[in-house]
Length: 120
Length: 107
Image 1 (tube, rainbow over the protein chains, first blue to last red):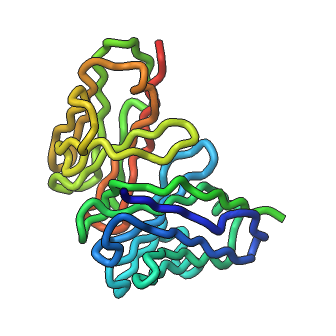
Image 2 (cartoon, each protein chain N blue to C red):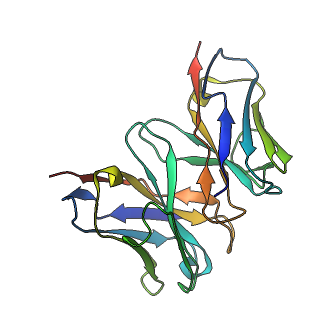
């Protein structure tokens, strides 16, 4: 059974940093693009970042480029999102998601989400 | 970035009704479109990928169609568990983009 479990959310200071992790199980992690998607309270879904199975290629939304870094450790089946320079508008529930196929960016499994609140 | 416009943004319907949600993209994406259902407090759930392929376990009353720039999600006979928000998503090109959502409410 595929499982994705996000950890690391919580309260962050404006300008501060947080690191999210997503621990995966039930599939060959290194074979799939992995993605972070966020949802601000009461708002729609916003794609944040994706990373290839090997970790060689990463893509970012303009809203987080230069501040957030996606990475993965395939030996630990874990996806990360390093969030620096936090802003109030980064407040959201962050989901990690697994691609349906090896090189696509549509998502068949999602984690339960972790809430990030940016406030002083 | 490819823009996705969903319509309507919300609708009220009764159990048994046929419901149609439309997603238009700002440029052609072939069939690289997915549909998700999201209930309050829960993660999105994949309904359809490649525009018209039903995800395993999703009821047959859900149907996706379209290609290019216009896509449709149809629920043939709305059930109580279908009241939720629906999102389209394109994955033809990065940045991946989502539609604004369609909230289906009980009439």
